[in-house]
Structure formats: C-alpha cells, structure tokens
Length: 310
Figure 1: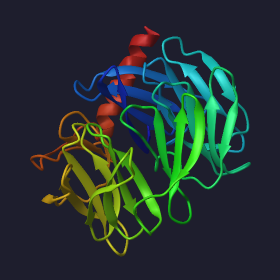
Figure 2: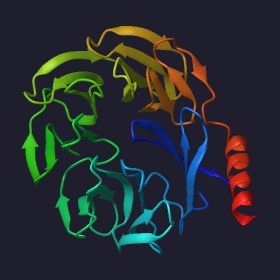
Figure 3: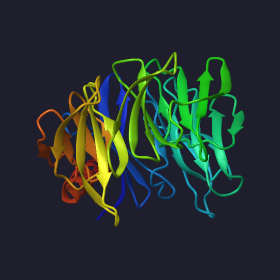
Figure 4: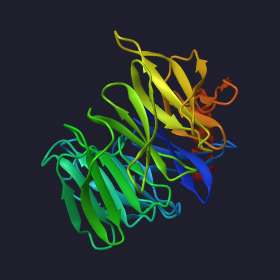
C-alpha cells in the first residue's frame, strides 16, 4: 500500500501534459494526464514531498530532501534509474528545472537559507537572497526568463539563463507580490499580491494590462490554453471556499465554481489540476475525478511492480 504525500505537479514534456506524484515511501511516478497511463516511476532514497521536477526533455528527475539525515539535491536518469548528479547538504524543500534543463532552481530553509541556481553540467551554484522561488515564481512563455517576487516588500527579480544574470525589477503594485504566473499564450504574467488583487502585466514593458480584486484570493492558475484563470478563494478562518474564474485577456469574472479545492497547475485546453488530483474545466465548470483516487494509484503501481518482478 502506498501513501500519497499530498504532492501532485504538472510537467510539460514534448508538448504533452504529464502529472508527477510524490509518495511518502520515496517513490515518484509520472502519468499521462490525457490517457492516465503510467509512463515511469522511480524509487528514491527518501520522500521528497514537493521538491521534485522533471526536465522538459523527459530525461531527468531532480529530487530534493530537506531532512537532516538526507539533505541533498539529486538528479536521476529516468530511463536507467541511475544517479547522475548530487549536491550534498543543500536542503531543498521546493525545486524546478528551468525550461532548457541547464539549471535547477531550488529553495533551502535549512543550512544556509535562500534561493539557489544549480548548473547541472558544471555543478556551479549561484545564490539569490530575498526571493520567493519555486513554487511562487514563474518562467516566461519563451522559457528564457524567470520572474520572482520578493519575500518581503514590493518588487521582485528577473533572472535570465543565457547568459545567466539577475536584476531587480519593480512591479505595478504597492503591496508585496505573493505569487507570479506567466501566461502560456501571451507575453504577460499575473501577480497575486497581499491585498488579494490579481494584476496582469506585460513582460517586456512591465506595464499593467488589467487588474481585478478577488476577496480572500490565496492562489491562482492559468488553464493550459491561457483563456482562463482560476483564482482560489480562501475562507477567513482557513480552508478553501471556492474557485473564481477570470477571462484571461480581460480579467472579467465569468464563472464561480463552488469547489473547496485549490486549483494548482494548468492542464491541456481549458482545464486545471487541483491539489487532490481532480481536474476542473474552467470553461464549463465541470469537475472530474482525474487522478485523485488513491486506490487507482495503488492498482497502477502495484501492477507495474508485478510486471517488473516477473
């Protein structure tokens, strides 16, 4: 029996949306979101919770462990299961590959806290203090830039990878930015600030395109086609209240979905993935089980394990 560690993430490999699942026992499995087929799984030395990522070419898995007894960042070859790189005593609690898979960006909360940029081929590391890294940062649509909010105060950082560089940027909000999300179809990005305002900003100029106040907004996600934005409203006493759906280009509220779940990641077309694994169609408001059934995960992985042992 496996235990889902409450961690599902979406990755895009060869234009296909894949879902990675992290399990408490130290296993990571990857399924196709369209066909819900198991594509690969890897048994790791320990559970990595949210700290895992898959490279855009589908070749490598990065995993981080924030536990004292195993505190490294590791890179694994998914086809062979071999460990290909490791950075000891890095304590990652969240990470992502940059789109060209040259760098792994991770946040550390133990050891020397901060956001780090680890170049896989050279093992060189750059550190950035005061930034919110994964999962609060965003890559631009062309994959060449990472936009990161500050942990405290207004403004943020622009990180480029070819060549590598870091610059401070201002954002069109006087309040601290909490979350950034880039549009998958236009050169704009969203800001969710501490005042529960969603702002759409032009990547090049930094100018405001539109803004929308959504009371008690706590998270947001684009749909995969960029036409819709799901804003998660939280209750004042904790927990999720519902989803507010905005039109991606105008910011107009077009639908309320009475679903007490956080919309966490885009899927193909008008859909998003919720933390539970359910899929929500932001165009129609329909909710489907998706990959939320733990018995399904158990059956899928146990069947694969039996085939491997045979």
